[in-house]
Image (cartoon, rainbow, N blue to C red):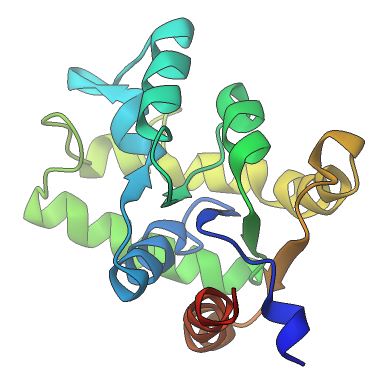
Length: 190
């Protein structure tokens, strides 16, 4: 059984639909393993919800991932080649639509009401989150099914054949209770 955990590595990418808990799980893994956590949203979003120019984003991600170990979270296809070419494990959070929607509604409402700063001074607002074409809720509705189909196909692509383990979790407690011990164990075994 220990051989299963042998190849988890120290470079971990956490992916999943908007609101699935990528950042929360990535942060927990990073804390438990005492390695850096890199949040792609923090690199991508400039002040006033302006996106970082593509090449600048790629350069920043390349720099952020230059360390020997890290946990990164995010779904940006623009940098997937950079992230996954270095990753040793990909964790896919494939939770049900209603679970994610419930979590995302709660998170978005709380962030909007508390005016919690996210990245570079950006804050979610009731207007933008609930009554806008740029709504994070609308984004989740538009991308949820695509992500559920896309990631299993991507894991089969030849350019990602080096990824020995692509963990897929369909129940939240499995992600938290199983990933961290799995990764810890792999460090001990090596």
